[in-house]
Image (cartoon, rainbow, N blue to C red):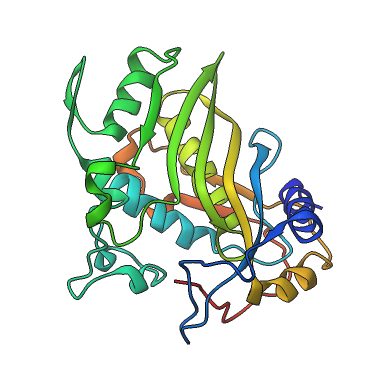
Length: 276
């Protein structure tokens, strides 16, 4: 059993057994048919993934690791906020007629700020610090920009990364205000594990621990039975996931530079309803 499976099963069972239900409460999310989308949820969930031990991909069902990587490049490397630059269609519900999701995600990472070392965006600031001041305790990004919230089609869920170097190892904390556990949990874990691996590789470091902090970890009402079936499934060893070692510049990574080997998993869950 992969360690990601163990953490996922434990988290889901705890939400089911001990979570708070929003049934009967006023909620913003709704299903496509207009029905309110209620959840059961836990507050302040913290999961730790050691990338030196194994890559944290679920095996209970497959995570589309290469599509997750493509979205990661869309946000962090292309710094785009237009779905036309993205291979998958998971953002289409939040895009306008031009394909834009507003001043969200990649747009925020591409904004220039005046840092002590000069004007640059948040991604370039992380790269600069890892190269020039890697033991800094200020290596972080934050895309929850209150000035621009009214112009975001979706306010960021995963909004902050804090990086910390210990010896020759790069670690990171992902802060997330809200997470749809069935639809997005392992997708985000996979993405930010890959981001940690990318930053580590181009900085001459090893990828260490990813700490995932979720303020509101929830299972939607129409997902509960799916989750119960999912966590009863057999599990398999974690796959081997690596990056093309020849890449030394963060902006040179392409989707083809991701290598996934020996990924054994259960069947995919199709047509998961998504609350909007």
